[in-house]
Amino acid sequence: MMESDKIKATILVLNYQKAKRTVENIKSIISQETDFRFKIFVIENTAHKKEEGELLKRELGGFENVEIIINEKNIGYSKGNNVARGYEEGDYVFVVNPDIIFKEKDAMRKIITYMDANPDIAILGPQQVNDGGGIAMSVRAFPKFYLQVARRTFLRNFLFFKEKVAYDEMRHLDYSKIQDVDWLQSSCFVVRRDFWEKVGGLNESYFLFMTDTQMCFDAWKMGYRVVYYPEVKVYADGKRVSEGGFLKFFKSWALRWHVLDALRYQRRNFWLENPRKRYYQNKKNK
Image (cartoon, rainbow, N blue to C red; front, side):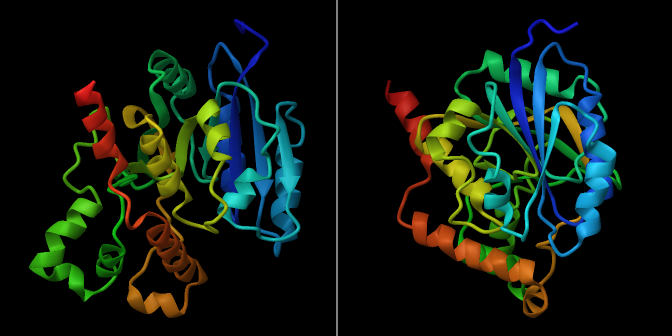
């Protein structure tokens, strides 16, 4: 029995070449045990494969709380999710990659209960477990471009870069603890809707990557927290379109977009101090 007919959250799932997994994703969300309602937008962004949209409509078209939007072309990650801008309802917006599966029946209820109890949190992400059983490194330090290059080349093996790259990838992090973090990958995170509205959804200056980094940067800058929350686990396929070393740059359009978006991020934020440090300093001085 629902406590209220009022919608509590809007969930955005942007599909790109993963329609079968997206169907699993949506069915796992629909089977969540909650005392609130939510609405789901499934946005089909594959464009060059019409069968992706056809499968989504065939398998998911019968669910009353699911709306399917078919884009005529691939408009990118940020714009793709923002197709639903203006139609969000509730206190929260979930951004969820198509490969994410919610196996824990109370996952969304636990996430929203925690967010309700901590109004200073703008963005929260659960622990992500890959299909192979490993914990995905979904937490990162605010990026420096030279380290992003070093990660993909032989430079990562040099002592000067090795420790810095490891820190950038948050390899030292205790993934079993609830904690504040610089930024979270938007493969699965929830955003407080009033903050989402303030920043205009995902930043469309970025085509495919770094929009989640920018959103977390802006959250800290505006006096909110960004929190990693391992009390809830979600499950992912572990496949990333940006994987690969330097040589893959010449073959992978996604990796080239990663570099371009990283340069855009650096141009926008290079001279700005870490807003998370400033947040703590302001708290200390109060």
